[in-house]
Length: 531
Ligand code: FAD
Ligand code: SIN
Image (tube, rainbow, N blue to C red):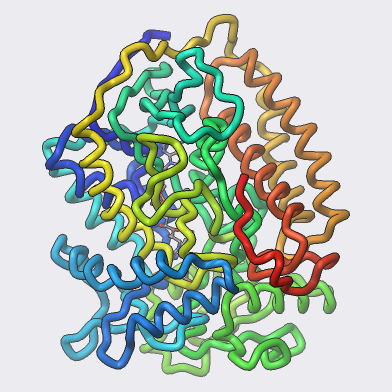
């Protein structure tokens, strides 16, 4: 492979809301490269439906939004972080509007939607395609900025740290530094060395680790895995959020039915036609997500049904079509008219509340490495994320971490001693079946044993099986030339390991982590899980 070296001030890994908003803020202060593994728009951001939670109405208050976030997070949110992020929300909405985003409005004011866990209507949205509007707005600005290069189909393989200089780092040390990243350029079939004064990790979530997920195929947890291998601190990985209502249809994999549909009055029914949420929580369909997802899971398991129904057909048809044009048309494609028919839904893995541990300015435990968005764990979400708080976090922390990065590059230089990627002794793999089999097996293990309801026995089983997959995949990796498929499986295994290990450490049930052996909330266990 040809060896290529690049030098930039700011290296951004990932092109969702977090990476793009960071890139835009730092671009006037130095050279920026945005590395992204697919086409630039392919991200969780692109598929966001419900919207962005922010206090935009005089009847609402920061205090209310903070309270709802803390309640959803079940005692594990960092209250200072919550106050900072909630407080910066309106500014970020204004910034997006100034940059060209058009959100739904009514009588000249923003139309504010409602979602589970929110005591007020405070969801700024663009009908049910908010993510597309945010992504396109930011991408358009990024593409026009002369200091930003966008590199598509480039896969970040490893963060470069002291370890690559031959200084082996055996445990978490406060003085590990990041010097950039090794990036596999798919089109050139070459691993390139990107030296950077500051690296922003914004690679998003890891929903693909589960068999059923709302996330697109790029969401394989690469950032958390890379950071973990680089010995960064990783936090709260047991808190995987399952969205209660993903469309159950063989021709429509991974399609979300937004919580905003319940916010507009949709109800959940079991196959017998009973409105079962009344038996689980006084907030019924608008209880926080963990409660609704567990209630559906319980209905499916006790009744032996394949799905439950979500019904909005009692609302005026035109208003349903206006509010949810994307959901209406996607369901119609598979023969479901949501203005007349009930929608078959099941829970699916949706959001990783844990991730690379950072402060509210995106600083990780590694110097010159920042992280932001779904890959990070700032303390905003605690044990369960409040709906529509993640785009908010990506935008606010993207902005704040840019201020940190601008200061950092002023006193930094490139580490020229970094060696190029060494792929000596490796060959193109002939055993592709091993990779695809291990990927499928991993996703099924996680779904069956590390899902909505866990037990010690299931976690132990999952752990044994993941160990085996790890050994096989590592052996394969050591003798193979780099490929995206292989690296993704390797990263997914690392994420699975972190989720299982974190879940095994927590000896209580809290928020999204429910384990039958420890069904109660335990005050003594109220702390982050740090690895
Ligand atoms: P992403 O938007 O996922 O971007 C990550 C980027 O990193 C992508 O470009 C990806 O290709 C790239 N990448 C990943 N690995 C690598 C690698 N190894 N090398 C190079 N590039 C890499 N949140 C809300 O607040 N409101 C909502 O309404 C909402 N709706 C949602 C609906 C759906 C269907 C889904 C899936 C999520 C939703 N979420 C919502 C969650 C929210 O969209 C995400 O948490 C948020 O967009 C994450 O932004 P991000 O920039 O951190 O990551
Ligand atoms: C949804 O629209 O239901 C998703 C909102 C979110 O994940 O925050």
